[in-house]
Length: 282
Image (cartoon, rainbow, N blue to C red; front, side, top):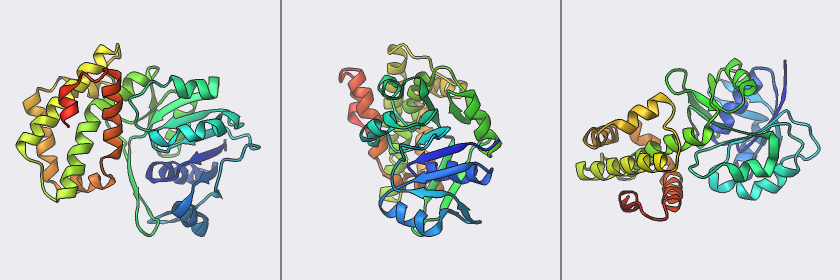
């Protein structure tokens, strides 16, 4: 059955969802701005290496459309200005999907019982010509959401998805390793060489400190893969950071820079009232 979906934020992740969902026959509206709005307006949808997947294109979220789902895939620091419009929207479900360490209560309060959250197991970027390049994870840690209905819709559209009832623990567990790793590849990309062993040790210590914080905050380390990573000794974690930084494909993933992992670390430091020396040094 076709559903009506708005995708708010059509960078790599949002564009991947929009293309897969529209390709599966759903009624998809993509909401973009600036250069990305120009690109999707020109193309009439999401341009992929295989051609354009047609969607409706808008420069803002319509407040008179009964969307079955509004999928919000902007970065965490970009969501606050959008909350009034999302609160006033007529979307039946509002699903936020981005990296965050913060409590989800503010987002839940903004949209009430329409709230849902998810995390994409997708690596994607938009190239200079506006073409989506995406890889969708189909094994291991899959796209994870709080709503079983939408997990089924995503899976049927080619984005394998599972559910969790404790998204805050999931997100914090993920951030504990993701932030040091993202900084590793960003630094390696900027320098166009691998990080030093001493830097790898610093980042590994930051990972250990981050996982300890997650536990101190009363969150469970989930899923199982995150729990395993959290138990890896510092010296082995250092190797897991040092080695990929020397692989060109891994370094290329650092092109997005350090803004996102720095925001995650800032949220961790705030949650711990500043008492995180290893993360502070990162």
